[in-house]
Every structure is written in C-alpha cells, then in structure tokens.
Amino acid sequence: MSHSTPPSLPSKCPIKRITQSQYFRVLYIHALIFLSFFGIAFASDDISACNRCPIGQLSRKISAFVSPSKVTNFLGQSKSSTTATNGINRSGVSLLNSTGINSKRSILMMSTIDDVATKVKKAKKDKLEKAVRVENSTNSLQVHVIGLSHHNAGVEVREKLAVPENEWNLESARLCEQDNIVEAAVLSTCNRFEVYIASHSARSAIREAYSHLQKRSGLSHSELRKSLFILSGDDAVWHILRVSAGLDSLVVGEGQILSQVRQCYLHCTEEEGSGGKVVSRLFNTAVSAGKRVRSETSISKGAVSISSAAVEFGKFRCEPDLRKPFEKARLLIVGAGTMSRLLLIHLQSLGVKKVTLVNRSMPKCRDLEAEFKEIEFDIKLSDQLDQTILESDIVFTSTSSTGCIITKDGLEKINAGRSHPILFVDISVPRNIEEECNEVDGIFSYDVDDLKMVVARNTALRRREILEAEDILVEEQNKFQGWQQSLSAIPAISKMQEKFETMRAEEVRKASNKLTNLSPKEMEVVEKLSKGIVNKMMHGPMSALRQPEGPEEKKKTLHILKAMFKLEKELMN
Image 1 (cartoon, helix red, strand yellow):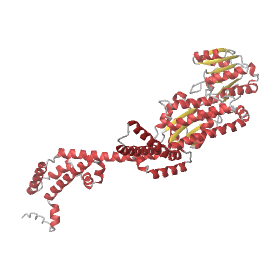
Image 2 (image 1 turned 45 degrees about the vertical axis):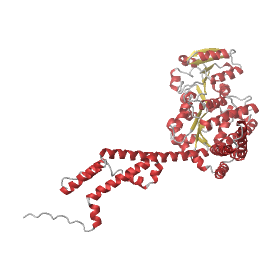
Image 3 (image 1 turned 120 degrees about the vertical axis):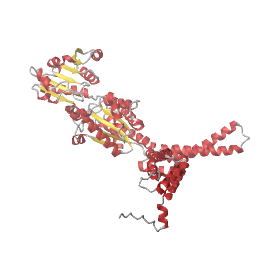
Image 4 (image 1 turned 180 degrees about the vertical axis):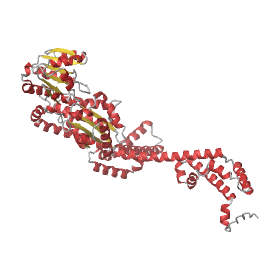
C-alpha cells in the first residue's frame, strides 16, 4: 500500500505566509521597478540629486535583481510546480506585460542605470582631478637635475648615456611620458650628461628618471648610482648657473659650454621640446647668467677649451712618449666638426704649418681649409685612415661616431707603433679610440679624463675670477627664485581680480539705473573711476602675493588672503 507524502502545512505566522506568497513577490517586483523609474528620472535631471536621493540609491541596488534573466527565471518556475503556482506565474506575466515591463524594457532600464553610474564616477574623478590641479597650481613646479660629469663619472660611464644633440628633444619627450615628470630637458656634452626635470612630486619624479636612465644605459644599479648626482630646488638652479658660466667645466671659463646650454634652451622651447614654462625659464636665466659672467669678469680671457687643452697636453707628452719635439711631429686630426675647428685654432696659434685631416666627406674639410689659410692641409677620406695613422706621430680624434673607429685589433693588424711610436689624444664622447689600444707596443692613448694636468693649472690662474663670477650668479639665482615663487600666487591673483571686477561691474550697473541723465562719455568716466578705485585697492594684496618669500612664508600669505577675500571656493570651482 503506497503512502503519499502529506502536503506541507501552511505556516501559522500570518506575516510569514504573506511574505512567502507568490502574490507578494510579484507585487515586490512591481514596487522595485516603479521605484527604479523614479531613480532614473532623478538621475536624468541631476546626477548629484540622484546620489543624495534614497530612491535613486535603491534603484541602483536592485538593477542587478531586475534583469531579463532573473525576471524570466522568476516568472518561469520549474515544471514540478503546482498548477496553482503556474496560474499565479501566468497572471504575474500578464500583469507585467500589462504595465509594459518586458525583457527589452528591463535591458533599456539597466543600460540607463549603468550610464548614470558611469557619469557619477566620471564626475567624482573630474572633481578629484580638479582638486589636484588646484593644489598643484598653488605649489609651483620644483626643478631637479640628475646626471653625471667629469667630476664623478669616468668617460666609460658617460659615453653610455651620451645623447647626440639632434636627439635631445626625443629623450626629453620619453622622460615626460613618465607619470610624475611634467617638463624635461637634456644636456649632453663630452664632459657631462644631465637631465633637468620639473615636477610636483620630487621623490616620484626622481625615481622615474633614475629608472629610465638605468634602462637606457644598461648599467647595474650600483654602478650607475655611484656615478650619478641628484640635486633639487635651489641646488639644481645653482648647478646649471655654474655650468653655463663655465665654473663647473673641466677647463674653467671655456666658452663652448655656454653655446651648448643655449642650444639646450632653444631645443626645449621648440614645438617638439618638453621644456615648459619652468625649465625653459631656468635655461633662459642660465644663458643670461653665462653671458653676464663672461662680460663682467675676466673668467674667459686667456681661457682654454677642451680642444686647446688637448693640444697643450699633446705638446706636453710629445717629448716623453715620442722622443721628439712637438714642432717636428706629424699631426693628424680625425673629424671636421666644431671640436676639430677649435683644435686648428690653437694649433695655428702655436705656429703649426701642416696638418693632415681625415673625414667621411669633403665639404667640411674644404670649409676648414678655406678658414685656416696659414695651415697646409692634406685632406683624405675615412677609407684612408689606417694608412694615414701609420704616417702620423700625433693623432687627435673628435668625431660624432657613437662607436670606436680605432681599435686594438685594427692597430695590430696594420702594425701601428712598430716603426715609430704614435700618440693618440681622444676628446670625443663616446670615445673614438678603444681603451685597450694602450696595450699595443708603441701606442700611447689618452682621453679627456687625462687632461687634468692642463686643467689644474688653468683653474689655479682663475681663482679670483671664480669668486667674482659667483657673486653674479647669486643675483641671477635670486631673480629666478622670485619668479618661481610668484607662480604659486597666479591662481589667487586671477581669482581676486575676477571677483573684484565682478563686484565693480555689478555696483556700476546698479548705480547706472539711477544715473539715467548721464551721457555715454560721463558713464565712461564713471567706469574708469570705478576701475581705478578697484586697482588701487588691489595693489596692496597683489604686491604681497608677488613679494619674494620662502615657501612657508608664501603659503601663509596665500592662506591669509584666501581667507580674507573668501577665494578658496572660487579656486575650487
């Protein structure tokens, strides 16, 4: 005898019976959909109102519940349900269809709610970014310099970071791709590689620049870190001023570095440059300071350049290494650029009458030949370099090549140094002569780091001029600092002017209603009078904002004026 399972008894609790009934569930869905439409209406008019409205908040919470899949699953129960339940579901479907809520309407509603949520997120993001911009506008960009020079890095390290002048802007653009670097400029010469950056976040920007340089150079962390110097703020400003004035050069007072700093300024202000307002102004100040130092002191009088130091060094080493006087040595210059021209200037001043010149092409060689008419030139192309080396006693190399053009294997192959010793002086960075060339018998090879004897003598003669030059640089640094501090006051000054002008215009408009008998010219007088009064009233606060002060004093002044004239809200808006 089979026993059927007795039907489950209804709950005795009336509230539980109501909440578990299918009618209540259908009614609950209708209520949620109805409330959702109210949320959409609020959102379409005002996003901020939707954020504050409890109906709008509830509509977003149930958007996932009222979806096509859940409505379908809810309305379509399993086949094991009772007939009464199916009847209720069918009536629920009819009820929903009668109110126009079907799957398409649910999809449209979900899409609208998602759009509202996206707009709300975007509004919050824009507000946060605006707050950051306002904060940054009152905190001016700080300048930092990361680099290496002949003071703390050997030529073998400097050449791995060297950048040709035609790629300075490209390298600066790569630096500005970092998150925290706003402006950048690159200065790369034979004795230094320096990156100047401007940022609101010093630590993050320096870290990004360091990481970029490490990847670019391929040097290990320990090797690069011990060669780099990092300066920020006033120290960075003081450094570029000394560089431009020639006080930080290998040869104190040499003039070529000022030209290189000027080129850096011109590049960073080009359309493709990444200098921006602060870095460009810094380099402009540096160029002006360099010119002042050279015109107001004797720092550059009788000073030697890297090229002339190389000639002096070659003359000094000629007797010990070659065992012959400099006047009888056969001279070879490889390259026909600016450095080679400076070599020829000094050689001509020493009375040299004949020089062999090797270059990749003839035009530049012919230009040098036309300029130095007192020197007899023997011009040859690069494919004759090996044979020309064998016929020379002193070889000066200064090319734009990024690799070594004279190697140990190459010298051994042509038996250089066998018949007579040869002296090489390489003033290129990256180097043109392989370091291992010194291992070849009869070969004496030197680079820019070996010119210290000539440099020390030159520096000793210019101690007094250095002190005079530094007094000028202090004045130029103070000017730049005053300009930089004034940047933080620009937003406050603009808002103050705007607020005062609005108040002035409103009061004049009110008064004009009562001054109907005034002619247009008389009204112009009233306008000018009101503007004059406002300008005089603003003179004191604006002068206070523009006054050169330290960072903390400037912040206090800004805070007082913002509170006094209620500028905080205007700046946020």
